[in-house]
Amino acid sequence: MRKQEFLTLLDKYLNGETSIEEEELLSKFHATYRHHEHLDDSFFTEDLRLEILSKIENRIGTHQVKVYNWRHWAAIAAAILITLSGITYYYQRWNETTYQQIANNAENVLPGKNKAILRLANGKVISLDEADIHAHTILREQGLTIQRNKSGQLVYIIGNEQNTNAMGNNTIETPRGGQYQVILPDGTHVWLNSESSLTYNIDFKKQRKVHLKGEAYFEVAKKTVPFIVQNEMQEIRVLGTHFNVNSYQDEAYSQTTLLEGQVEISALNNKNQTILMKPNFSVTTNNTSGVSKKSEADIAAIMAWKNGDFHFEDQKLSTILRGISRWYNVQVDYNSLPNTHYTLQISKHVRLSDVLKMLEKTGPVTFQYNEQMIHAVKQ
View (cartoon, one colour):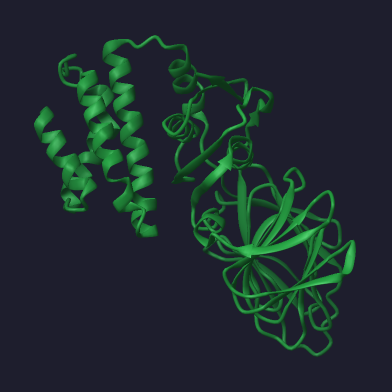
C-alpha cells in the first residue's frame, strides 16, 4: 500500500465512509505491517506520523457526539496510533527510554475480561471464567437452580415449588482485571465491576437485600418488597429502578447515581439523614466523615465502565490510574504522580500501553512500566 493510498483510506475511515472491504484492508495492513520488509524509511516518516495524529485529533470532537461511534473509534484509533508508533520505531530505531519501557512492557498487558468466583452457602467455591463458553447448571437443590447461560451471566432460578427451602448467603467476587453479570432470584440484573463483591441471601421472598463492595450497576426488578443495597457508608432502598453504586474503600467517596426511578439513601452513621433521589443525580458520601451531598450527575462518565469505556472528566491522575490499575491488574507508584487533573476517554478493550499513550497526549507527564508497576515521569 502506498503512502497516499493509506492516507486516503484513513481519511475515509475517520469520516465513517469506508466500506467493509476497505476496513478489512486497513485492519489487515495493521495486523501484518511488521512483515512488510519492502517498506523503506521514506514510507512512515516522522512527518507522516504527525500528519496522521493530527487527522485523528481533528476528528475526536465529532466522534464524541455518539457514544457508539466514539467507542468504536477509540479502539481503532488507539490501534492505529500504536501501529504507526511501532512502525516508526522499527524503521527509525527510536531510543527514547519512556517509549521503550511502555512498548516493551505495557504492550503485553491485556485488558480485563469476564471472570469471577462464586462462593455458595455450603462453602463451595466455583470459578466463573469467560473461557468456559458453555451454558450449564452449577447447582440444583431445594427448589433453586443456579446456571451459567451462554452470554456468560450467572442466573438464579427459583422453582414453582411452594416448599423451596434454599437459604443462606452467596457471594460473587470479581478480581482485579475481571467483571461479571448476575441475575438474582428476583430477576434483578447486576453488572459487577473489577475488584468488587456482592453478597446476597438467595431467599428473596421476604427480603431483597444485598451487600456491595466496589462498584456495580443495578437494574432492579419491580416488586412490592423493597430492594436494599448496603455498602460501608450507605443504605439504598428502592422498589424498581436503574442505578450505579461506586463504593471502593480506597476512594475518598462512595457514590450512588440514579438513572431511572426513585431511590432513598441513608448514611449508615446517620440514620436521620435520608436523601430522596431523582434521575440524573448522584449522592456522594465522604468515606471519612460520613457526610452526604446531592449533585447533578455526569451520566456518560459514570456509566462508561459498564459500556466498555474509560471516561474521566477533569479528574485527578491518581483517581484515573486507580481505575486503570483495577482493570489491568497492575500497581501504580502514586508517589510519582503529579497533582494535576486529566481528561481521558478510551475503550477499555485496548492494551495498557494504548491507555498510557493517550494519557501522555493530554498532559505534561510520561509513563514507565516495569515489574507490574506504572511510574510517572514529570516532563
